[in-house]
Length: 147
Image 1 (tube, one colour):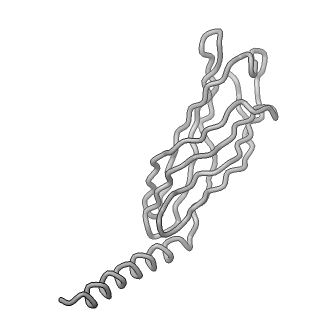
Image 2: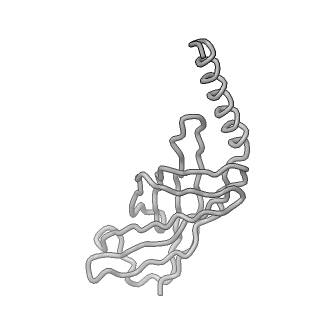
Image 3: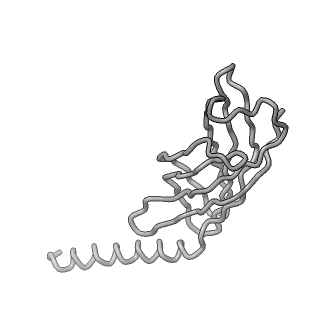
């Protein structure tokens, strides 16, 4: 094979891969909610705040989310931020769950006498794909019952 044919073949493969990624990215992932929220005391110093984020992938291609940037508020007061690389692979037509854990001190936010709290989540899950950028925006308010 000569060099022109090899270059043409490489270019054709790149165009095909790019086209497949563009077709698959037309159907954007859907944020389905934040579930199983729990706030547990960690001794006298603070709390552990856990739950999971649910995302549906309507595309015919697998989706890989690789970063989270999420602010956590309780009763309109910020208690923490998650800005981490993640590895969440969601198959075609499936729902994926990303579990989170956040710890905060009682000096920052004391919930000793609370029975319910308004939890506000704002931010996004995203990917770092070479061919397409996917962003799952999150802006939701949930109620957390303290047990």
